[in-house]
Each structure stands twice: as structure tokens, then as C-alpha cells.
Amino acid sequence: MTNSNGRSAANSLRAHIKEPTTYAQQIADELVEYLNEWHSLPETWDNALDAQIHKWYANAPKVFPKKPYFSPSSANACPRELYHKAIGSPRDETKKPPYQGRWTRIGTAIGDVIQRDILFMEKHFEKKTGRPCPFSFEKNEDGTPMFEDFAKRNHPVTHRGYSFNLYGTCDGIMRYVTEDGEVLRVGLEIKSKQTTAAKTSLHSMRQPEEKHVKQCVAYGPMYGVDLYVILYVNASKKSWVYLEGEFEKSPDMRAFGIEITEEDVEQLFDRFVEIRKSVEEGTPLPLDLNGWTFNGYKTAIAKSLTDEELAEIRAKVSQVRRSNLYESTKRQYVEALEFIERVREREAE
Image (cartoon, rainbow, N blue to C red; front, side, top):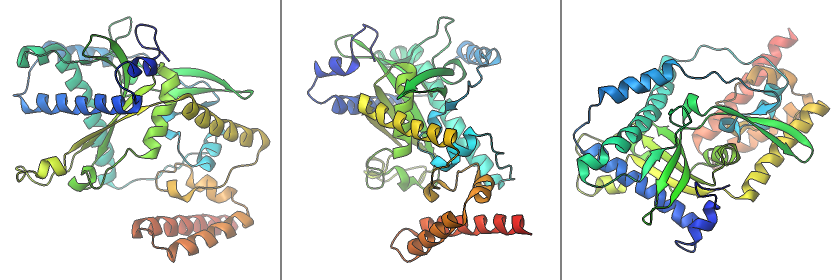
């Protein structure tokens, strides 16, 4: 994976400091600093740029998946779910509570806001502050920014004799200008938090979530980047005015820089190959109850479980109920088992 000058980004980083991952975190911290400064300024209005953004989306290219494929957003999903997705099982279609629909829409809107802000910073930050902004989005040949519909692609992979595609799109591929003028390509993944203001506190959030890291690992070979920033934005706030020192302890925006290694990519591709093998052989992998809440194939999975697998799940749920795990985790396991048994009871009628 190379930067704009054709050099390995990791090698380039070693010219700056000894630890590339430390430098990746410095980039992440700097992004937060620039966003904080931008959000502290009076809002900038640019009707021409807003109109351009809408025109881009009005003529966005259509890219459809090429099978077989895996989506980076589900890189860490339950293998049983990915198995049923691959064989074309019917996806669950259930009406969700309205607050969940709003939650999802707000999360999407947060990503849109950050992307728009970076486009505005590229054009207006220096005018407002007297300093250039080192962050901008990479552009496609037609001038569209490298994110969302304008970055969607099928990336072919051949690994250990198996072929598949990585299909999806990223929240952004940025161009970061170092102090000595070198341009590095850095991926951006934006995630929202909406439960409590404490969710992004220094105490509660000490590292990025594993599923988000795996998602970025999949994006690495798709876009030829080995540096990524995972940006968490919290929509929940304690109050309009924070007490002195409170914002520093519990900021509403956190960022983590990661370096994607060849070993990371190899491990992820090994997992995808394992799923491809299970599809070819017709032997689905075990169910992972940790991902049950957002599993989109619950009904198909419940029907496909063998009696032996169901017995193992019952034993696992019983063990979890007696454990010291969070009550929310225990509830998820119990509700999963209850759902599975309801589906199987209806099937047996």
C-alpha cells in the first residue's frame, strides 16, 4: 500500500518517528483538534459548495455487488449470519420501534455532517484562521470526493485458492499533509454514539471497537491505504454548558489511529475463506450470540440449527446467566434463545 509519492506509508512514517501506530494516533488527534477549532468558529455558509454536494449525489454512480462478496461493515459479523447471507437465505423483515429508525438516521446524518465539514475546511479553514488545514478528501477524476457513493466498489480478492469480492464504500479517503509537505493517504471511518455522554469519556472509551477495526482492515486493500482514523462522535451531551475540566474528561468526539498490517489483512481474509469453504461444503459455522442484536438472518438461522447445536446454545445461555457479565449481555443471550425456540416451535406445528 503506497502514498501519493509511491512510497509505503508505513516506511514514510518511520522517517518521522519510531512507532508508526503512534504517528497514526497523532494524525487522529490532529483531526479532532482541527474539527474542534472549526466547530468553535461561527458557522460558514457556502451555497455554491452545498449546491455542488447535492449535484454530486443527484448524479451518483450505481455500483452493484459482484458475487460472491463480503462487505467491510460486516467483517466481524457472526459467521453463521454471513453463511446464510451467502447462500441467499431470506433476510428478516420486521417492523422496528420508531426510536431505532431515528437512531439509525441520526447516525447517518452525523457522518454526513463530518464529511461536509471536511469539505468546508478544505476551502475555508485558512481564510478563517490564517492556517491551512492539512486534511482534505481525495478526489476522483470527475472531481467528486472519495467517499460514500463516489467511492463504492467491488475489489476482487484471491486468497488461498478462493476468490471473492470486497463490496462497499468508505466514509472517506483523506489526504493528510505532514509538516514537511508530504502527502499521506488516510482512511476515515465515522461512528456515532447516542446513549450517554459518558460513552466517549476517557474512562469508558480507551480503544476503538474491534468490529470497527476489522471494518477498516477490509477497507485497507480496497483503497490501498494502511493508515486509518476511526472517529467517534457522540450525539448525547451532558448539558449546554460544561463545568471547567469536564469536557476534557468526557469529550463528545474521540479518534483512534490504526495502522493496517499485512498480517491483519491475512487474518481477515482467512476468516472469509473459512466462510466460503462452509458455503461450498454446506456446513454452516457455529452461531455467535454476541452479534445477535444486529443479525439480519435470525429466522433462517433458527430454522437451520440442528438439535445438537440448539442443546449447545441452551447450555451456553445457562452458563452466561450464572456469570458476572453485564445484564445487557445476559438479556441478549436469553432473548436470542427465546426467539430461536419460538421459531422452531412454530415450524413444528
